[in-house]
Image (cartoon, rainbow over all chains, first blue to last red; front, side):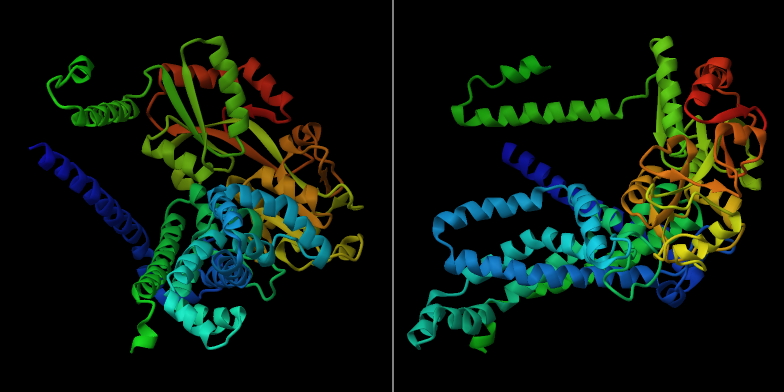
Length: 287
Length: 287
């Protein structure tokens, strides 16, 4: 009886999560899709102008889509090599004591609130970027550097697991054939762990795409399509975060519609990540 | 109730005790949930809206609550449009706005001007410019003037900083200065007066606009058409970048006794003198 009761409670909790996801999806689409239908999907996605309160209003989110892509790619350019290097170091090279200190330190990096990252970007990094390169300082570059650090924990944790999961036999085989440690890492271990590493990168990409608070503080939020990393930009998330509090009527609908676009982006990324995670480590060599 | 819990099942074996603890936690959680869902304080009102009005309203509410024990005036800064909407929907008793009402809003709402606020155009203190004409400001925010030497300053690019669509300050600036011309897409957008002040204080090339009441020594307020922004010049009508701070509520629906008492306090001698001390200009019962 008691077992059944607890079982039912846990089932309800599990269903609660699913229902919450369903409700969120429903409300975002219900609030955003009518505007996309009115404006036209292509107009909405490819429009260059965002003037939601002018008369007549203009709802084009291309600058934000481009801004999101710029920033995400920038964060990956900084975060992936760094994260991969740390993961390889921790698994292959670091003395166990050092790795034991590094792991919690990296987890702590994930625990820092994003508003703190944004604050550091705004008050420390932006003036440095302005002094070094000119421009307003609040820019894609500033945002990408900080975001690159923000996605490090995700990339490191998942790549580390993937590298650790490479079977010892493969490792030993590479060394037995006379390769150096570095040759084994770059030629055998990393390629074998590839699918896990790609999954980590995709999850990091999702984190970069979804980050809002820190981005609002660092990226300047201008509505130009940036042509250099030193220019400010707006992302899909930062525009929603910046404007939602004040928006009403069609403006609000347009922000939800932006949310729909973002939702679909993230869904695609997560689906990709899931397929890569599920792919077994040895799939390539065993086929 | 909790007595039965604490002494429940004394005949059960030791292993069953943790479940009693879990049940107590569950009970506590349910009680918290009940408290969170409880009715609002009977002696309270909610005033919500413009983030520009919020600090002044909070100050007045604090003074009022100090003098009248037991009443709760809850001030929320969500933006002018959100405040007007909350008043229309009856979510809040009083809405705050820092822009004029649209005709359809004005037909459904009663309004009073609790004070008038001047917008100051600010630059970094290191900037040699001390004043601009309205046309020059239009040129700068419209993106036609891109360098300070075009308005008599050094040959440096201008960093334009404005507000996001939907904010009362943004629509006041659009209405008073831009007069229907669009703000350039290159302008940085920030979510609050404070954020603009922070950026202008950091960036020697920046120009922005904020409430005169919160101009401080970290930035320099410009004379516009050779008129220095000051309370005297606003009252004399020579400084023209002035917007109303409104309290609005549903037409034909009398305020609650507390709501009416708070409005009377704000419009009375004591409230008005506090607003003047804070750098605002006297209000009036008509817009």
